[in-house]
Amino acid sequence: MKNISTKNDNLHMFHSYPDVVHVDELREMLGGIGRTTAYALLKSGRIESVKMGRVYLIPKINVIRFLCESEK
Image (tube, rainbow, N blue to C red; front, side, top):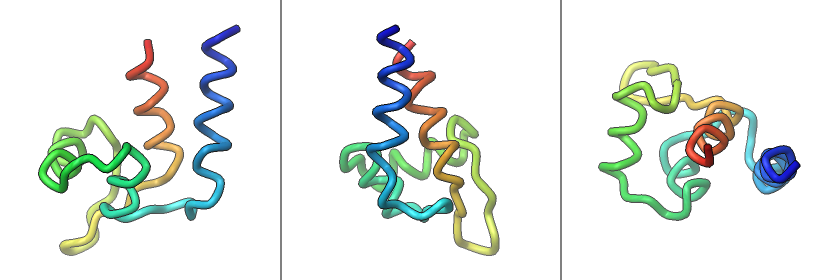
């Protein structure tokens, strides 16, 4: 039961963010992580994203998935 509650908490916690976020929003969502760490997560594929030119577009659901997988 705790796992389900935690997933719901993550969904509600990010309700104010758009469906697709940028790196600065990702950093906020992950508790203020550094820019280098954020880009490392994206480049490694641990958080799935789409790169358009120089800009990473990160579906919010992928951030939530990352957090849920990290909790296991």
